[in-house]
Length: 117
View 1 (cartoon, rainbow, N blue to C red):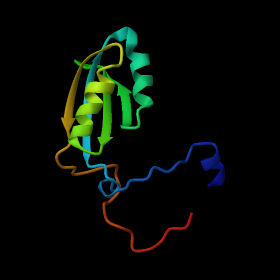
View 2 (view 1 turned 180 degrees about the vertical axis):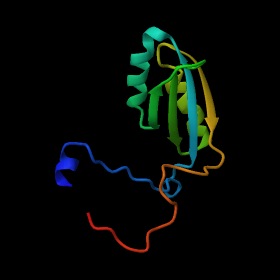
View 3 (view 1 turned 30 degrees about the vertical axis):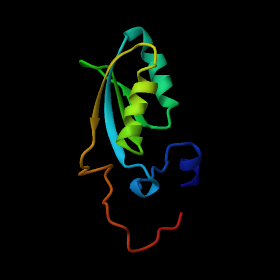
């Protein structure tokens, strides 16, 4: 187990309820980016604390990102001031998450026993 963890084959992602920490606004972003700027836009998004996941995709848009902000006002400011200022971003479609019905593949209930790592 330790060898798997030390080589990066086995790692842990932690799912937590982010609302008690003051982050209650989730959204997915579909960005249309100039093809020659895809790498730069991806690198810029990767440095933003609001971005939880970002990927290059194919279709009508070419970058996808999942973001987490404290409020809708913070999301608006993030889109207007930070995403909109990235060179090469032509358009952004922001889709707020109204209700999440599934995340990862773990049950949303707390375990009744402790697991020792």
